[in-house]
Image (cartoon, rainbow, N blue to C red; front, side, top):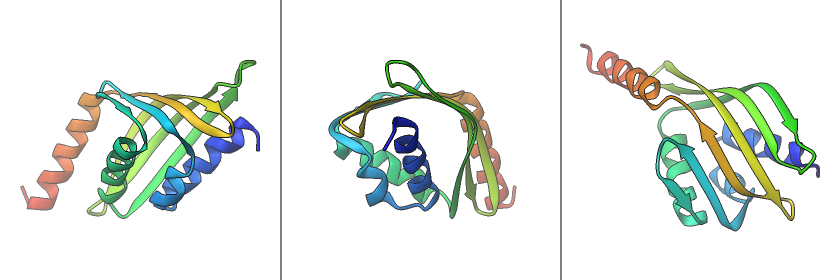
Length: 131
């Protein structure tokens, strides 16, 4: 499987909300830096974080606008990550890089606007509580 296919399989697993399948995409010593949040080292920490995202709502969609692989094998994505929470969509533009080793993701860095994420979560929370 090529590196782009590995990343597309990860995205498909997220959209299926299949945590076990998502986790099979990573090396045991994988690193995920969901910038500007703290770095997560190893599959146990990554699993806990991804489980939280998956459990936030009832649907996950990664709309990939662009995906490319560099000559060194790094895969880059431009996408909008969407989570349906209480019937409302949280949508965050994201740039991501994936470093692949032996057919699995060894390093994953996503860049997004935390303020935009928090603002949308606050709006969703208010609508849920009826404010």
